[in-house]
Image (cartoon, rainbow, N blue to C red; front, side, top):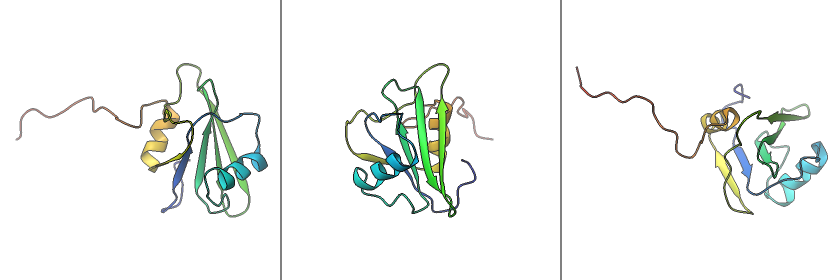
Length: 115
């Protein structure tokens, strides 16, 4: 997912999604619930109720791509709201997929002296 074209937006659907849904159901959810065109080339992210599974839907110009990832430990960080949408940057998407809290990433080192 790091090879996304410039200008691609990442839409995160708040709340839990039924992870049994496939291409068509998730595309319909992107269109009706999120109010976005699923064939726009943007990425739509959905998380299951347990929080350890995420699905990403993306139109690459030729067809819909469905990416799924399950964390073996931990949970994907998600907004607490039951409804709505959040827009992420590509860097935040990378952190999300790594299981990192994309909302407030912490730097591990900070310079103390200049020069």
